[in-house]
Length: 90
Image (cartoon, rainbow, N blue to C red; front, top):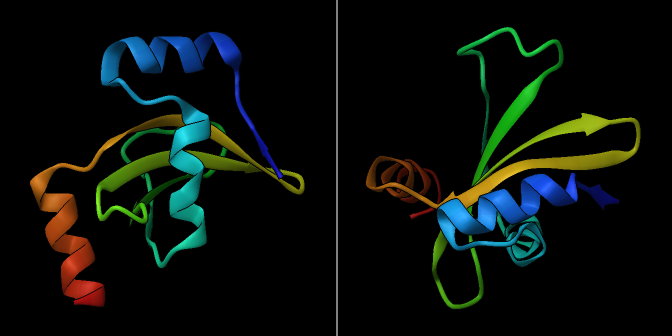
């Protein structure tokens, strides 16, 4: 169901301290999802904002490839993203 580039996963961990596999839990909870239209990526990209069971907010950028969700990046959500989530779900 999920896939990612392992080199990108390690790079993401070095930059943000989060491994992609640790961000997957946000897909099991309510998420705010917006399409990332800042650039032409050649495919639709989505920004998902959710939280883990401990209440920590994450932002996950991903795309859909066939029946798989391909993780592009994951990090702790910024304040603006947390507010967007809270305005949607309370």
